[in-house]
Image (cartoon, rainbow, N blue to C red; front, side, top):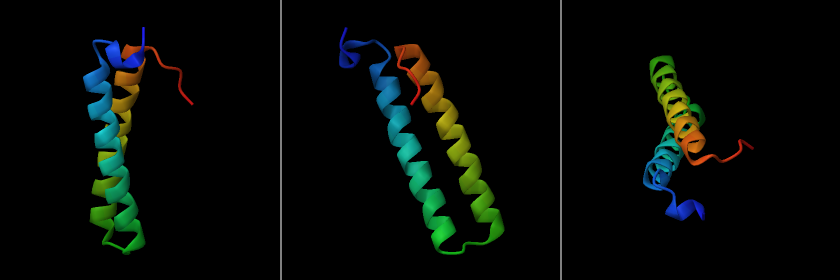
Length: 65
């Protein structure tokens, strides 16, 4: 079955979008020398988004890179 037809595909796509947003926010904080509290918050959001992505990826049955 193509991944686009899998019932968990929308959840997986959402997780990818969240991961990209969190990664961009973390990268921006690091490049702009944001205060430590902002960097910690961005890192925490990135970890949560990564966990969401991993869970959705496992539902679809994709192999981790």
